[in-house]
Image (cartoon, rainbow, N blue to C red; front, side):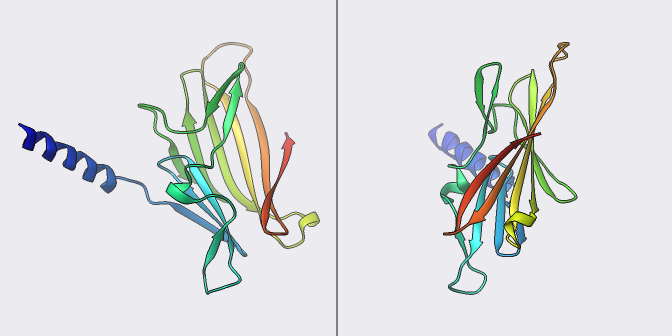
Length: 167
């Protein structure tokens, strides 16, 4: 019996690894963004001055970037954008990048789209544009959909600077 249970646990572990979605990488200029579809997290890198095609993380990137995530506040409750039991993160490529779709409960879903952009103020440095949209899926009247844009702009000494603007 113990051998069968042990074999079952190994089989489940191996099948989980076999069906894991590979990270999605986007690069522009000296910036690389890596999205992790299984967890809904991301990592941001800058091309290193040392070595060819070597990127240095701009913030923690260990464990598939488990330390970088967003949260949304809905009706006074804070929800971490992450997979939930029975509600995995949906992932799709878009024209300009890629997006995650989080279904955190039956009342709303969150769509988070990642792309690169440049602004005249920043010169030629690419920026990561993260647009987060919250959609009411409850069917309750009077509820609305909101959108928020967050830009991560590289600024010396190679650290991200968050610029927050509401649409």
